[in-house]
Image (cartoon, rainbow, N blue to C red; front, top):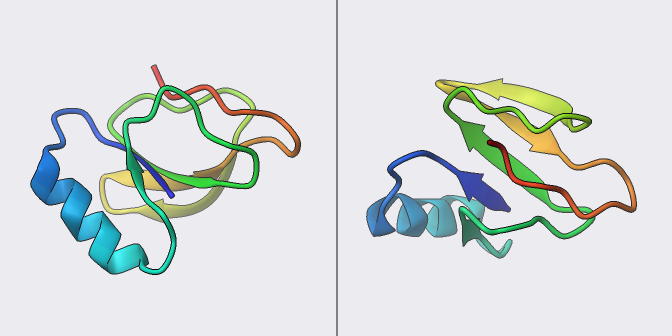
Length: 73
């Protein structure tokens, strides 16, 4: 699970690790591996990604199949 959240700190990271265990979590990674989901908060939405579910203040998204996803801008 990739977590993209402007201004997120270690406490947000540790909460995501706890909530999504046993899935691995990365905070604001430079790219997303194929098959990973991303919790995207803020205004940026990666083009070509699929919205899986709306979240309070964000959206759960999946990168296009077989492609390394670019992070939101």
